[in-house]
Amino acid sequence: MNIYQRYTDSVIGGIVVTGDITYEDALERILPLSGRLDSQRKILDTKFYTRLEKDILKGCMMPPITLAFICSQDKINSLGDGNLDLIKELIEEEFSNGYVLDGLQRLNTLKRASTKSNFPSKQHILLNIIIAQNEDRLLYRMITLNNGQKPMSPRHQIEILTQELFDFSDYPNLIVQTEKERAAHPIKDAYNQSDISKAYTAFITDSIHTENNKLIEEKMDQILVSKILESDLTGSVEFKDILCLINRLSMSSVLRKWFKVSNNMIAFAAAIKKSYSDFNEITNEDAEIAVTNFEEAFKAFNPSKINLGKVRRELVNLFVSHISELKGSTSSELMERFMEETAQ
View 1 (cartoon, rainbow, N blue to C red):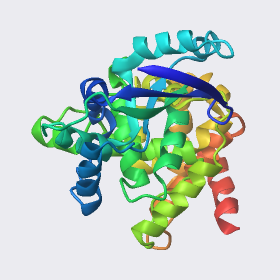
View 2: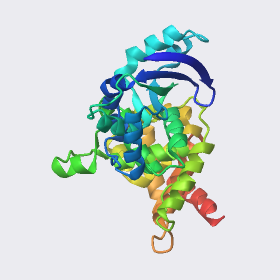
View 3: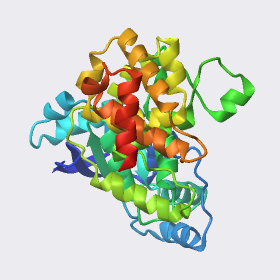
View 4: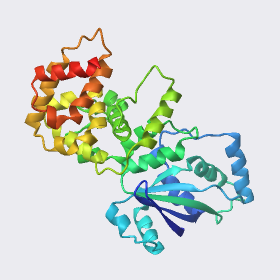
């Protein structure tokens, strides 16, 4: 693998590197990485890729493959302003932990072409390599890369990222199961993988309105992408911080039960950036009291006269955003505040 140039990406707080690698090395080293993010993605067999396979055998120059790595800001800073040897060293060190953000179909086309006798194994393919400082910023770049194609929907990308990038074994009180795992071997009090993915979507978009069955899915995806592209990536709070907070709060059976309500989890994740430091200082006992008072106040709403899920998300969002102000409120005081908010 060769490295040619390094650029700074100020939006994701990382760097972008250009380079190349031979076809044979790409198949040996990069193709195994493709399943890390695209394990559920269908391999296409279209006329375009059939033609590309023929062109590869004739010696065409394929469009670049985009790889991504997550490294700490300290590691990124240690690379200096332009030392390509240090950058190559870091990439080699982290290579097995990399992700293919763009180029899965091309890699699989390359694999098919490699079975032919006239395969040019020493031909080079260009590389764009993104080194980001955390998962949230990598998601942003992944969405911007894939939006405008027809590969995976933004939701699917977020679901895969949530499952692949976050090691839930780091959070002993946050047991997470996919629907398939739950059907085979359900674990009591486990969180649904889909709810964690929805919470991540709410966190990254700063919005509780990321689910709406009234809209055509394609239109909802467009709204979701625009929210992600407009989101602020410069904040100090990462989704890992939120998982740590939920893990700590989940030591309480009362709070774990509260978080297992999908709308509570979504609204909490959407609002927590505004009050993370305040919420992080609250003890589990005080959080239990606050949540209990919230639920008592919420009972005042007539479920036959409102969209219960929508109102719950809106009020949890309000409650979490203003936790320093509302944590000591009685259920009656919260009820009055909620009535004022929903009357507007």
